[in-house]
Length: 253
Image 1: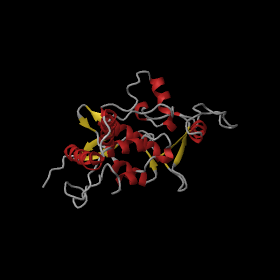
Image 2: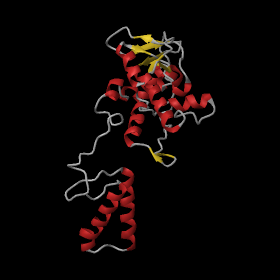
Image 3: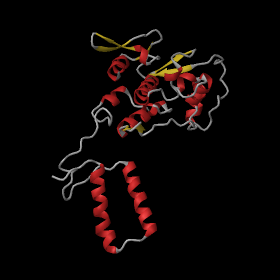
Image 4: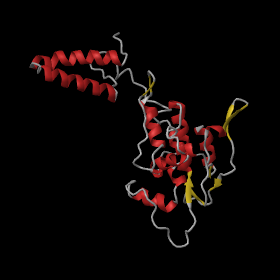
């Protein structure tokens, strides 16, 4: 999907209606279809285009696609603290929406979210008007559960979804960035066996969740009894080191 959208953006075209139904498999290859509301960008200096009406599917629509451009710019400038439309300037009586490549990236993020959690990020809101209001509300936090059932969602994947679903369109990644070798989801960091391992002097990868559990355990044990100097310097570190190795699946050679 990223490669399809990157090819479109490379031609300076904003699709404006990225959703699952517009991706089809043709002779074993994924294709992006339905360019009925796509827009060619006419200048090299901007990636934005103007529209006088709303387009797209609500579940996959970006905040800027649901707001008058002046309202979006006003809200964005105040970091979402003023989620109300400012007075329209003279000559802008009609609603003006400004869409660009970042809007397509938001929609792609919604698809990725659905692939991970089963539904788009705002699908749990039954009323369509309330759903649209949630999308444009900077204070409405999108939930990114760390697990789906008993399966852990990779942290790199969660970070990628958060980047794509940033209400600040200027802070969303481009397709090129998402496809680059440095992307933490498509190209997760491989643990170098020379650095990570069970041997002396090695390091171990620790997730934020595991670190939190360790800290909680240390605090609880200290409440029960403060360790002696020997325990604090040797016994406890050794025990927690063994626990970390077990949790990250490192076996002794």
